[in-house]
Length: 424
Image (cartoon, rainbow, N blue to C red; front, side, top):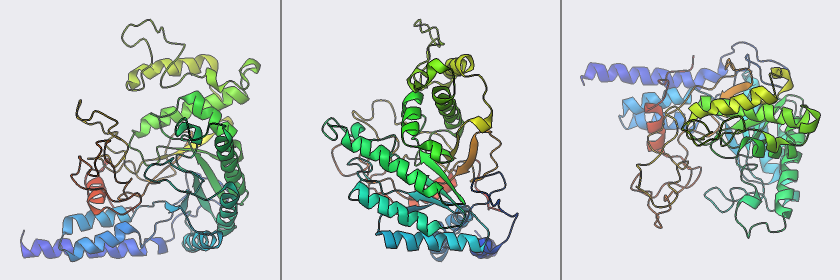
């Protein structure tokens, strides 16, 4: 590359970084004043994000291509996670974020991730010491938001991975699971009590809980107190698959609460990504539902058409979808490569950024596409159940959960679908 071209690209990167730093000082269309997301909502961009810092580091190292991509990545809104700290500490941190966003007329996206026993004993395990401690922490989180605008995603995996799901010896009496459900309901109610806060309770992803199962869990955990639910957090399943799944969940909750009298309390009757009674289920190819084959989901659609009909969008719970790593869809290893669980969700190789964050999705029940999982942060030190410490997909010990991983950030930006551009 000629010196002229290098100087030109360096100038582009410097200008991009300057624009990124100034982005939050730009006033665009006024965001709505009500406590919900609308297509006009504009989300907050942190000018000092990890991607922005990586862009500067890449530029100093002479890596102009990656610096440019990191500057592009840094121009888009991403969530900020709150995972620990005393009540006073979380109140101060939350308040600083919402005040920075308020100063530039934007809505920040926050993640509350501190429920007791979170993630079982996996890579992101931890959480508050008790339900009482958690509720004090949530009270402080809500106090930090105050009267400011905010969108909060409540406890990724907290509902799809209940204590009873962690193993037969984790919750033999069911007390821990009951406490988790109550804690989540408390969090949703407390956060939604703030006048300008939208609240979405996490519900896993399309390849996890069956529709009726997660619908009932959402109802038990007080989704009715908030704005809806969140899907695909920290995962890579296609946006359209999650949108279909979320629509089924919303219709299933309506069916079990406001549908036919005989259906009340029967979310378990709902068809799912795994089974539909509307299908012939006669063993012929395509005549039963397979979660791995979306062409068979027509049978699930058929069940909802027959039993639910078409309630209006106003009658159904809405949802948001994490598109931070699903541009190339889900990853699967070569057949036979691993004898155990390949942990397809964990630092999936070769993935790319998905649809850009926006509240103008054009999908009636999808309030927003968000980058909830911060692109470039590790899922943990994945081993693909090989018994060692090395991740065989990368040949290294992966960084701990939540740690910044430059190589992953570069890959996600390079493989983005659609192609990564600057947020204008």
